[in-house]
Length: 352
Image (tube, rainbow, N blue to C red; front, side, top):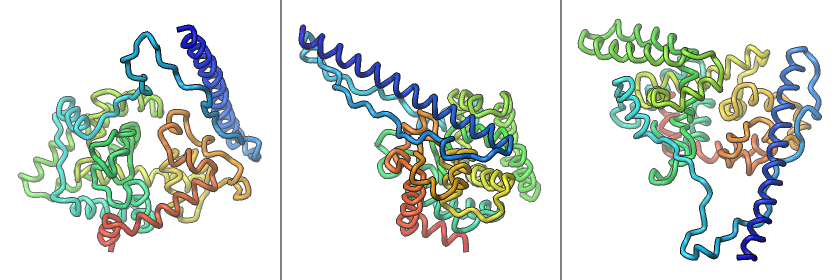
Protein backbone atom coordinates (compact mmCIF):
# COMPACT_ATOMS: atom_id res chain seq x y z
CA UNK A 1 0.00 0.00 0.00
CA UNK A 2 2.88 2.37 0.70
CA UNK A 3 4.16 1.88 -2.86
CA UNK A 4 0.63 2.45 -4.20
CA UNK A 5 0.27 5.70 -2.25
CA UNK A 6 3.58 6.99 -3.59
CA UNK A 7 2.57 6.07 -7.14
CA UNK A 8 -0.84 7.71 -6.67
CA UNK A 9 0.77 10.88 -5.33
CA UNK A 10 3.09 11.00 -8.34
CA UNK A 11 0.14 10.48 -10.67
CA UNK A 12 -1.93 13.22 -9.00
CA UNK A 13 1.01 15.63 -9.11
CA UNK A 14 1.59 14.91 -12.81
CA UNK A 15 -2.11 15.34 -13.58
CA UNK A 16 -2.23 18.66 -11.72
CA UNK A 17 0.79 19.92 -13.64
CA UNK A 18 -0.73 18.88 -16.95
CA UNK A 19 -4.10 20.45 -16.11
CA UNK A 20 -2.43 23.75 -15.22
CA UNK A 21 -0.41 23.74 -18.44
CA UNK A 22 -3.49 22.91 -20.54
CA UNK A 23 -5.53 25.64 -18.88
CA UNK A 24 -2.81 28.21 -19.52
CA UNK A 25 -2.46 27.08 -23.14
CA UNK A 26 -6.14 27.26 -24.03
CA UNK A 27 -6.48 30.57 -22.21
CA UNK A 28 -3.69 31.96 -24.40
CA UNK A 29 -5.48 30.61 -27.51
CA UNK A 30 -8.63 32.52 -26.49
CA UNK A 31 -6.67 35.68 -25.68
CA UNK A 32 -4.87 35.68 -29.02
CA UNK A 33 -8.15 35.08 -30.86
CA UNK A 34 -9.75 38.06 -29.11
CA UNK A 35 -6.68 40.15 -29.94
CA UNK A 36 -6.94 39.30 -33.64
CA UNK A 37 -10.64 40.10 -33.65
CA UNK A 38 -9.98 43.50 -32.09
CA UNK A 39 -7.17 44.25 -34.54
CA UNK A 40 -9.35 43.41 -37.51
CA UNK A 41 -12.15 45.57 -36.16
CA UNK A 42 -9.68 48.46 -35.93
CA UNK A 43 -8.20 47.69 -39.38
CA UNK A 44 -4.81 46.93 -37.83
CA UNK A 45 -2.44 44.44 -39.47
CA UNK A 46 -2.19 40.90 -38.06
CA UNK A 47 1.27 39.48 -37.42
CA UNK A 48 2.28 35.87 -36.92
CA UNK A 49 2.92 36.67 -33.27
CA UNK A 50 -0.83 37.16 -32.89
CA UNK A 51 -1.14 33.35 -32.99
CA UNK A 52 0.01 30.79 -30.42
CA UNK A 53 2.92 29.05 -32.14
CA UNK A 54 3.33 26.08 -29.80
CA UNK A 55 1.31 22.87 -29.83
CA UNK A 56 -1.12 21.95 -27.01
CA UNK A 57 0.48 20.20 -24.03
CA UNK A 58 0.25 16.41 -23.95
CA UNK A 59 0.08 14.38 -20.75
CA UNK A 60 3.28 12.37 -20.42
CA UNK A 61 3.12 11.41 -16.74
CA UNK A 62 2.56 7.99 -15.19
CA UNK A 63 -0.76 6.15 -15.58
CA UNK A 64 -3.15 5.98 -12.67
CA UNK A 65 -1.99 3.10 -10.45
CA UNK A 66 -4.30 0.25 -9.47
CA UNK A 67 -5.35 0.07 -5.82
CA UNK A 68 -3.90 -3.21 -4.45
CA UNK A 69 -6.65 -3.34 -1.83
CA UNK A 70 -9.11 -3.89 -4.70
CA UNK A 71 -7.37 -6.60 -6.75
CA UNK A 72 -10.50 -7.58 -8.69
CA UNK A 73 -11.38 -4.05 -9.72
CA UNK A 74 -10.78 -3.20 -13.36
CA UNK A 75 -8.51 -0.29 -14.09
CA UNK A 76 -10.86 2.70 -14.45
CA UNK A 77 -11.36 3.66 -18.09
CA UNK A 78 -11.38 7.25 -19.22
CA UNK A 79 -14.68 8.93 -18.59
CA UNK A 80 -16.95 8.42 -21.59
CA UNK A 81 -19.80 10.86 -22.07
CA UNK A 82 -22.83 9.50 -23.86
CA UNK A 83 -23.44 11.18 -27.21
CA UNK A 84 -27.04 11.19 -28.47
CA UNK A 85 -27.63 9.34 -31.73
CA UNK A 86 -30.29 9.30 -34.46
CA UNK A 87 -32.70 7.25 -32.33
CA UNK A 88 -32.48 9.93 -29.63
CA UNK A 89 -33.08 12.76 -32.11
CA UNK A 90 -36.16 10.98 -33.48
CA UNK A 91 -37.53 10.22 -30.02
CA UNK A 92 -37.02 13.82 -28.91
CA UNK A 93 -38.69 15.18 -32.05
CA UNK A 94 -41.73 12.98 -31.41
CA UNK A 95 -41.87 13.78 -27.70
CA UNK A 96 -41.24 17.52 -27.87
CA UNK A 97 -42.80 18.53 -31.19
CA UNK A 98 -44.94 15.56 -32.30
CA UNK A 99 -42.68 15.52 -35.36
CA UNK A 100 -41.69 12.53 -37.47
CA UNK A 101 -39.26 13.38 -40.30
CA UNK A 102 -40.32 12.33 -43.80
CA UNK A 103 -37.69 9.79 -44.77
CA UNK A 104 -36.62 9.42 -48.41
CA UNK A 105 -37.61 6.45 -50.51
CA UNK A 106 -34.01 5.36 -50.73
CA UNK A 107 -30.76 7.27 -50.43
CA UNK A 108 -30.85 8.42 -54.07
CA UNK A 109 -34.00 10.46 -53.43
CA UNK A 110 -32.33 12.42 -50.65
CA UNK A 111 -29.25 13.04 -52.77
CA UNK A 112 -31.41 14.37 -55.61
CA UNK A 113 -33.32 16.64 -53.22
CA UNK A 114 -30.09 17.95 -51.71
CA UNK A 115 -28.55 18.50 -55.14
CA UNK A 116 -31.54 20.58 -56.30
CA UNK A 117 -31.49 22.80 -53.23
CA UNK A 118 -27.69 23.23 -53.15
CA UNK A 119 -27.40 24.17 -56.83
CA UNK A 120 -30.34 26.58 -56.61
CA UNK A 121 -28.68 28.29 -53.64
CA UNK A 122 -25.48 28.86 -55.61
CA UNK A 123 -23.07 26.18 -54.41
CA UNK A 124 -20.78 24.72 -57.06
CA UNK A 125 -20.59 21.05 -57.98
CA UNK A 126 -17.03 20.90 -56.66
CA UNK A 127 -18.07 22.35 -53.30
CA UNK A 128 -21.09 20.06 -52.97
CA UNK A 129 -19.41 16.78 -53.87
CA UNK A 130 -16.01 17.28 -52.26
CA UNK A 131 -17.42 18.52 -48.95
CA UNK A 132 -19.85 15.60 -48.86
CA UNK A 133 -16.89 13.31 -49.60
CA UNK A 134 -14.84 14.73 -46.73
CA UNK A 135 -17.62 15.00 -44.16
CA UNK A 136 -19.58 11.84 -44.96
CA UNK A 137 -16.66 9.60 -45.90
CA UNK A 138 -17.53 9.50 -49.58
CA UNK A 139 -20.31 6.99 -49.06
CA UNK A 140 -22.35 8.22 -46.10
CA UNK A 141 -26.14 8.10 -46.07
CA UNK A 142 -28.29 11.11 -45.22
CA UNK A 143 -28.39 9.98 -41.56
CA UNK A 144 -24.63 9.44 -41.20
CA UNK A 145 -23.27 10.57 -37.82
CA UNK A 146 -19.71 11.33 -36.70
CA UNK A 147 -18.02 8.17 -35.45
CA UNK A 148 -20.54 5.88 -37.12
CA UNK A 149 -19.52 6.38 -40.74
CA UNK A 150 -18.19 2.87 -41.15
CA UNK A 151 -19.74 0.99 -38.23
CA UNK A 152 -23.13 1.95 -36.80
CA UNK A 153 -22.43 -0.16 -33.73
CA UNK A 154 -19.48 2.04 -32.82
CA UNK A 155 -19.70 5.02 -30.45
CA UNK A 156 -20.82 8.38 -31.80
CA UNK A 157 -18.12 11.01 -31.36
CA UNK A 158 -20.38 14.07 -31.61
CA UNK A 159 -23.92 14.93 -32.69
CA UNK A 160 -22.58 15.90 -36.17
CA UNK A 161 -25.16 14.62 -38.65
CA UNK A 162 -25.78 14.44 -42.38
CA UNK A 163 -23.91 15.24 -45.56
CA UNK A 164 -22.26 18.32 -44.05
CA UNK A 165 -22.12 16.98 -40.49
CA UNK A 166 -24.08 19.65 -38.64
CA UNK A 167 -23.76 19.56 -34.88
CA UNK A 168 -26.99 19.91 -32.92
CA UNK A 169 -25.82 23.44 -32.09
CA UNK A 170 -25.37 24.20 -35.80
CA UNK A 171 -28.92 23.04 -36.47
CA UNK A 172 -30.44 25.17 -33.71
CA UNK A 173 -28.41 28.17 -34.87
CA UNK A 174 -29.33 27.78 -38.56
CA UNK A 175 -33.00 27.35 -37.67
CA UNK A 176 -32.89 30.47 -35.51
CA UNK A 177 -31.19 32.54 -38.20
CA UNK A 178 -32.71 31.14 -41.41
CA UNK A 179 -35.79 29.20 -40.33
CA UNK A 180 -38.21 31.87 -41.52
CA UNK A 181 -36.57 31.62 -44.95
CA UNK A 182 -37.19 27.85 -44.88
CA UNK A 183 -40.84 28.42 -43.96
CA UNK A 184 -41.25 30.78 -46.89
CA UNK A 185 -39.74 28.20 -49.26
CA UNK A 186 -41.89 25.37 -47.89
CA UNK A 187 -45.03 27.54 -48.05
CA UNK A 188 -44.39 28.28 -51.72
CA UNK A 189 -44.12 24.54 -52.38
CA UNK A 190 -47.27 23.82 -50.41
CA UNK A 191 -49.28 26.32 -52.44
CA UNK A 192 -48.66 24.31 -55.61
CA UNK A 193 -49.62 20.91 -54.16
CA UNK A 194 -52.95 19.05 -54.26
CA UNK A 195 -55.07 19.61 -51.16
CA UNK A 196 -54.14 16.36 -49.38
CA UNK A 197 -50.39 16.83 -49.88
CA UNK A 198 -50.70 20.53 -49.11
CA UNK A 199 -52.26 19.78 -45.72
CA UNK A 200 -49.41 17.44 -44.80
CA UNK A 201 -46.73 19.98 -45.69
CA UNK A 202 -48.58 22.79 -43.92
CA UNK A 203 -48.64 20.67 -40.75
CA UNK A 204 -44.88 20.33 -41.04
CA UNK A 205 -44.52 24.09 -41.58
CA UNK A 206 -46.40 24.70 -38.33
CA UNK A 207 -43.94 22.45 -36.50
CA UNK A 208 -40.93 24.14 -38.10
CA UNK A 209 -42.35 27.49 -36.98
CA UNK A 210 -42.41 26.22 -33.38
CA UNK A 211 -38.80 25.10 -33.76
CA UNK A 212 -37.82 28.51 -35.13
CA UNK A 213 -39.43 30.20 -32.14
CA UNK A 214 -37.52 27.85 -29.86
CA UNK A 215 -34.22 28.67 -31.56
CA UNK A 216 -34.94 32.39 -31.36
CA UNK A 217 -35.85 32.24 -27.67
CA UNK A 218 -32.25 33.17 -26.78
CA UNK A 219 -29.81 35.75 -28.17
CA UNK A 220 -28.12 34.81 -31.47
CA UNK A 221 -24.98 33.46 -29.82
CA UNK A 222 -23.17 30.13 -30.21
CA UNK A 223 -23.01 29.43 -26.46
CA UNK A 224 -26.71 30.22 -26.05
CA UNK A 225 -27.62 27.94 -28.94
CA UNK A 226 -25.35 25.21 -27.58
CA UNK A 227 -27.27 25.29 -24.31
CA UNK A 228 -30.54 24.89 -26.24
CA UNK A 229 -29.10 22.11 -28.41
CA UNK A 230 -28.32 20.03 -25.34
CA UNK A 231 -31.97 19.98 -24.23
CA UNK A 232 -34.61 17.47 -25.40
CA UNK A 233 -36.16 20.16 -27.57
CA UNK A 234 -32.77 20.93 -29.12
CA UNK A 235 -32.23 17.28 -29.97
CA UNK A 236 -35.70 17.23 -31.49
CA UNK A 237 -34.83 20.19 -33.71
CA UNK A 238 -31.70 18.34 -34.84
CA UNK A 239 -33.95 15.64 -36.31
CA UNK A 240 -34.89 18.12 -39.06
CA UNK A 241 -31.71 17.02 -40.84
CA UNK A 242 -33.39 13.65 -41.41
CA UNK A 243 -36.40 15.16 -43.17
CA UNK A 244 -36.25 15.20 -46.96
CA UNK A 245 -38.11 18.51 -47.15
CA UNK A 246 -36.10 20.42 -44.55
CA UNK A 247 -32.80 18.53 -44.28
CA UNK A 248 -31.44 19.71 -47.66
CA UNK A 249 -32.33 23.30 -46.73
CA UNK A 250 -30.43 23.04 -43.45
CA UNK A 251 -27.39 21.33 -44.95
CA UNK A 252 -27.20 23.85 -47.80
CA UNK A 253 -27.71 26.89 -45.61
CA UNK A 254 -24.83 25.88 -43.33
CA UNK A 255 -22.47 26.08 -46.31
CA UNK A 256 -24.08 29.11 -47.92
CA UNK A 257 -23.77 30.97 -44.64
CA UNK A 258 -20.01 30.56 -44.94
CA UNK A 259 -20.02 31.70 -48.58
CA UNK A 260 -21.95 34.84 -47.64
CA UNK A 261 -19.62 35.46 -44.68
CA UNK A 262 -16.58 35.33 -46.95
CA UNK A 263 -18.17 37.69 -49.46
CA UNK A 264 -19.06 40.12 -46.71
CA UNK A 265 -15.42 40.08 -45.62
CA UNK A 266 -14.34 41.04 -49.15
CA UNK A 267 -13.40 37.58 -50.48
CA UNK A 268 -14.61 37.92 -54.06
CA UNK A 269 -13.27 34.67 -55.51
CA UNK A 270 -15.24 31.41 -55.47
CA UNK A 271 -14.18 29.44 -52.42
CA UNK A 272 -12.57 26.12 -53.24
CA UNK A 273 -14.15 23.10 -51.59
CA UNK A 274 -11.22 22.90 -49.18
CA UNK A 275 -11.45 26.57 -48.25
CA UNK A 276 -15.17 26.24 -47.67
CA UNK A 277 -14.56 23.09 -45.63
CA UNK A 278 -12.17 24.98 -43.33
CA UNK A 279 -15.04 27.36 -42.55
CA UNK A 280 -17.48 24.48 -42.19
CA UNK A 281 -15.07 22.61 -39.91
CA UNK A 282 -13.99 25.37 -37.55
CA UNK A 283 -16.69 28.04 -37.89
CA UNK A 284 -16.84 30.96 -40.27
CA UNK A 285 -14.53 33.33 -38.40
CA UNK A 286 -11.86 30.76 -37.60
CA UNK A 287 -11.98 29.18 -41.04
CA UNK A 288 -11.75 32.54 -42.80
CA UNK A 289 -8.81 33.40 -40.56
CA UNK A 290 -7.06 30.23 -41.75
CA UNK A 291 -7.65 30.57 -45.47
CA UNK A 292 -6.71 34.25 -45.65
CA UNK A 293 -3.50 34.14 -43.60
CA UNK A 294 -0.25 34.47 -45.57
CA UNK A 295 0.83 31.09 -46.93
CA UNK A 296 4.29 31.58 -45.44
CA UNK A 297 2.77 31.34 -41.96
CA UNK A 298 0.76 28.18 -42.49
CA UNK A 299 3.57 25.75 -41.65
CA UNK A 300 4.14 27.51 -38.33
CA UNK A 301 0.62 28.17 -37.02
CA UNK A 302 -0.94 25.26 -35.08
CA UNK A 303 -4.50 24.26 -35.91
CA UNK A 304 -5.33 24.57 -32.21
CA UNK A 305 -5.60 28.34 -32.77
CA UNK A 306 -8.90 27.77 -34.58
CA UNK A 307 -10.68 25.48 -32.13
CA UNK A 308 -12.13 25.50 -28.67
CA UNK A 309 -10.46 23.01 -26.32
CA UNK A 310 -13.39 20.55 -26.44
CA UNK A 311 -13.73 20.81 -30.23
CA UNK A 312 -10.03 20.14 -30.72
CA UNK A 313 -10.20 17.11 -28.45
CA UNK A 314 -13.06 15.70 -30.56
CA UNK A 315 -11.28 16.31 -33.88
CA UNK A 316 -8.53 13.75 -34.52
CA UNK A 317 -8.00 15.15 -38.05
CA UNK A 318 -6.94 18.52 -36.64
CA UNK A 319 -4.75 16.84 -34.03
CA UNK A 320 -2.92 14.66 -36.54
CA UNK A 321 -2.50 17.54 -39.00
CA UNK A 322 -1.54 20.06 -36.38
CA UNK A 323 -0.54 23.03 -38.52
CA UNK A 324 -2.70 25.01 -40.94
CA UNK A 325 -0.64 23.85 -43.93
CA UNK A 326 -0.92 20.19 -42.96
CA UNK A 327 -4.67 20.40 -42.25
CA UNK A 328 -5.45 22.06 -45.58
CA UNK A 329 -3.26 19.58 -47.49
CA UNK A 330 -4.73 16.58 -45.66
CA UNK A 331 -8.28 17.78 -46.27
CA UNK A 332 -7.63 18.22 -49.98
CA UNK A 333 -5.97 14.78 -50.20
CA UNK A 334 -8.83 13.10 -48.37
CA UNK A 335 -11.35 14.74 -50.69
CA UNK A 336 -9.35 13.44 -53.68
CA UNK A 337 -9.61 9.94 -52.26
CA UNK A 338 -13.24 9.95 -51.08
CA UNK A 339 -14.76 11.42 -54.26
CA UNK A 340 -14.01 8.07 -55.91
CA UNK A 341 -16.51 6.24 -53.69
CA UNK A 342 -20.03 5.27 -54.81
CA UNK A 343 -21.89 7.80 -52.66
CA UNK A 344 -19.87 10.69 -54.01
CA UNK A 345 -20.32 9.49 -57.57
CA UNK A 346 -24.06 9.18 -57.05
CA UNK A 347 -24.26 12.73 -55.67
CA UNK A 348 -22.17 14.01 -58.60
CA UNK A 349 -24.57 12.30 -61.02
CA UNK A 350 -27.52 14.00 -59.33
CA UNK A 351 -25.90 17.36 -60.10
CA UNK A 352 -25.81 16.90 -63.87
